[in-house]
Length: 486
Image (cartoon, rainbow, N blue to C red; front, side, top):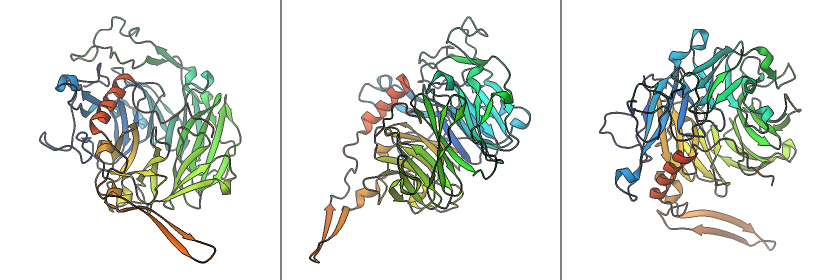
């Protein structure tokens, strides 16, 4: 069986490279690489990427939980510095085969430990948590029954302080609880090359790769004790009238951590966590329908974005009262299920349609889109064809996204190869003015057809930047520790 790790991230070894058809198939519509189709079929609902390296974890139904990897061929090997690197999404392991008993059910969420290449967690609709070390031949570190009903939205807390390191948060679907597990007390890490199970560093993968990856993938892990209910804290102290949770996002805040919790009945709440408890949450009334997804701004700590079932994306300011907190809106004309801020572009945000609201429609706004909040009438970039629904996605770097979809495919998208709806518009902005003397004026910004709406986008340099990102750092973190108040 193919392993999860790859020393140089360059050669795929004996692992199987999966794509949408025969070897002669063309690249995806976004022009980066062929999509990876998982053989299990069914919906892919959740995807996460490691922050050190290029590992992916994807889960869905009916019984899908797989580790993958984004690999590349170096342009220097492929034909010199002017040659483009080639990327492939490679299947590593089917993790369902390592689960036992009632844990072997549908995956309802996945996440990686921050600053780790191989430590990850998943949860199931039977209430189980599974803790994984993808660098090990036997990757399952632990599985335990954490809840009587389904779990969802698993999130590792960023280490705002050493006391919070290794804590895992998830929502209980039946009682609407918000659980926090103190796994850092049991998680022991060993530096690479000092694994007691393999002290000689002998190749344990049965192929030509060495057991060290040379990429700083981080330490391996083990558990020093049993996971019991004594390690669990319910961050929701009230036991009644608790709203259902649809999404959780974590951000460092001073010496602690903040959680943005998207909920039913039009509410979003911010929990401030220090030590083993949280303060009374700040509640924001977003609308009257479900708040499906939310993300803190990666650079401005007081700002966050939330998407509701009422087809409106709202930009909120946590310094304001609940009813006055909305400072900007994007009317997407479809329910948005996932929102992610674009790295290094503080005015841009990516969205994808809500799976339960989109049946067989193929409207533009149902697909994977990037919006510029300064010009919100039309999306800046469109990916994946005409309204193909991407169930979940994340930013690999500032110019690339990785998504999973209902048709069992994992895709790599590039903004340099996207469809840009604004290119075909001769008018990019308009403003109406009525003066005190009754005269009226209309100002229109006219632009050339078939222009690059984001300025000069160099496909060659963006592909090389992604290669360097994978080589030296890893995927863009969904959690920002460098946000500033503003």
